[in-house]
Length: 294
Image 1: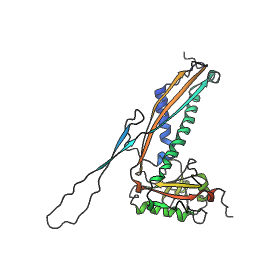
Image 2: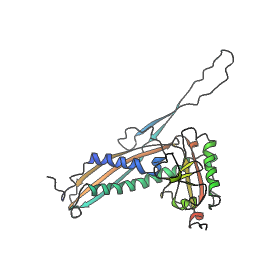
Image 3: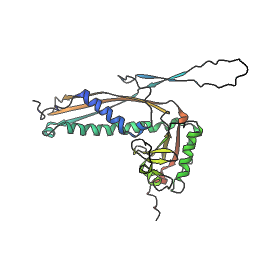
Image 4: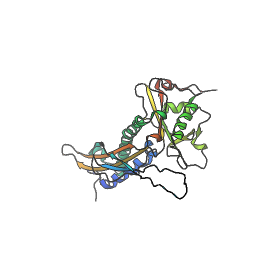
C-alpha cells in the first residue's frame, strides 16, 4: 500500500506532463490567437520546425488558346524552439501528511499560471513584427484613450487588418487588451458583451466583441516606456510550437521532502506580418478609472 506521508504515490510524471500540457492549451489567452500548424516533435532546446509558405498564384486573361504557365516557388523559414523555461519546487513531508492527488493538481495549476505569464508576455512582444501600415498611433504620439473615441480607434485597428486582406470568409480577428483598457471599452455603447453575442462561438475567455474583433483580456499586457502595445490579428499571423519536455519527481537527499521539477520548451514566429495590427496607447491615459456616465 502506498504511503502518502513519504511520497506522492499518485504522482506519475508522464501522466502529469500530459495533464499540464492539456491545461496550458485550454486557457492561455494568447493560445487562442495563434496557430500550431507546424508543431512537430520537440525534444530539446534548439530544435526547429520547418515552415513552408505557398507562393502566390496569378490569374491571367485567356487570349485564344495560348496558356502560359508560371513557376511557383514556395518559400520556407525555420521556427526555432529557443525558449527554455523550468519550474522547480520542494514539498516538505510535514505538509504531505494529508497529501493526495488534489494537492499535486493544485501545484500544477500554479505552474500553469506561471508558464502562461511568461508565454503570454513573449507572444504579446511580437507586436514588433507589425508593419507600419497596420499601426494605429505612433511611438512619438501614442493614442490617448477616452470613452468617447475608443470605438473609433478600434475600428481603425480592425480596418487595418481588412485592408491587408487578413480577414476573409471564416476568419475572425481578435484583439488583446488589459484590464485598464477594458474599463474604457465596457462603457462604449458599440461594445457587444459576450452574453449578447448570440449563436456565435467566441474564443474561450473572450469578454465580447468590438468592431468585429473578439476581445480578450490579459494582465500580461504591461506598459513599456509609458505605452501599451495593443495587439490584434488573425490566427494565421503567428505560429507557435511547444512541448512540456519533462516533469519528474525525486527525493531530496538533504531534507525530508520531495522535489518536483518540469521543463517547458517553446518558440513562435510571425509567418504573416500583415495579419497582425497594433495600437500604441499612452499608458497615462488609462492610469485612472474612467468616469462613469450617470
